[in-house]
Image (cartoon, rainbow, N blue to C red; front, side, top):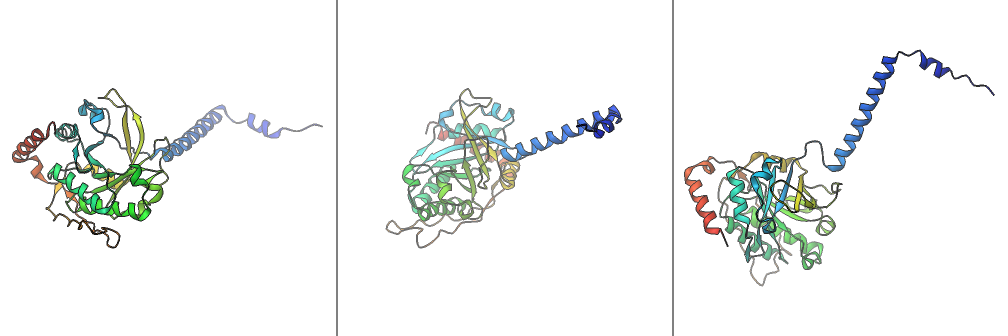
Length: 302
């Protein structure tokens, strides 16, 4: 049987330059599609990245971290209501001097809203009014906490947000995608509370969040060992990083503590303050600089 390959004959009369140009265009289109798919998988075209650190990264050189292209850092500041991280104020001092945006977190042991508010008070008293432009987070990952019910976990979140928001800071919650956030939807957290999800993977979380911890074994300039790495995933978090070091506009009243025998948070939801930190020239004055250095010196070795 004989076939006429007319299309091949037609192809033969197309000028070579047109075939070459068509090949280039097709290659560019395929490349663009691949890039779009990859950016969707990893979190977007404009990636803002950072790290989170504690005394385990003691000796980390913040100047090199910033110079190598990182945009922010989240520092462990406290644990429960009894411990200030040994490296917290050194890291904060170095970051502030370079105007490198940071936030901080409390490693939580709270089992109810009252205890979460106490942890918020302990941390807020420790930083004593100094700015944390990237938010202040409650790290919920203890096994006893994660065994709590949905309502009990949500009340811890509400207690933290009330305590931190009531002191004029931006609250946030950190936990793993498969633990806390498998029980509590980020849509349930109070308005204004940032959501930070840990998912150690090349693939971004399916759950909407402000910040994504994508590895516990990343590498950065300025430190020889592994470090947690993070990627910004919301416009509001990017805006906080870009804003830099704001100060509080006013000193809101501290939230009332729940009575010891009260089942705090089960019948009443703590009211979440909408107070946010705003940019202030006071942070650049000589008065503030002297006070800041005295504060850091007094906390060294705590």
